[in-house]
Image 1 (tube, rainbow, N blue to C red):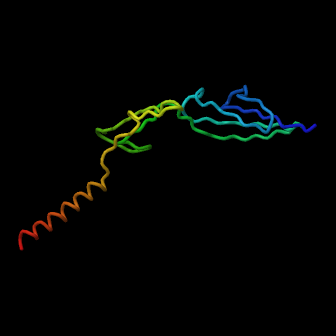
Image 2 (image 1 turned 45 degrees about the vertical axis):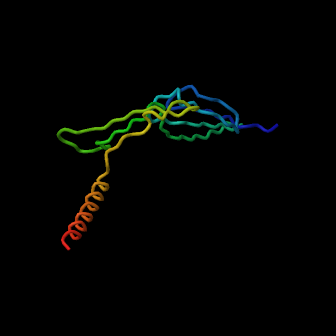
Length: 133
């Protein structure tokens, strides 16, 4: 009979495996049981002769509401009063998508203001030229 390798799945530093299955296998990892943040999936495989193979895969869980912050970036150096725009919204569940609150409001980018000023200057120039002729 063809012997198969045993696969053990560990999440983070847990001593107990999340799953213990024979290869090949397709499984679903339920991330709703994990806290948001960085995690490591450790896969240990033992072949029928007892040799082990190990693979680790780092991943990030973000099941909670998404948080968007405008006005402060990672590792920024700031001083004084700092205006922030913060938005947090959930994704709903797998069957429905929440429209309300899912869009993050943002301030108008600088390039849009520059484009408006250039266009207004161009229009004012031609308006003055039109009336002075």
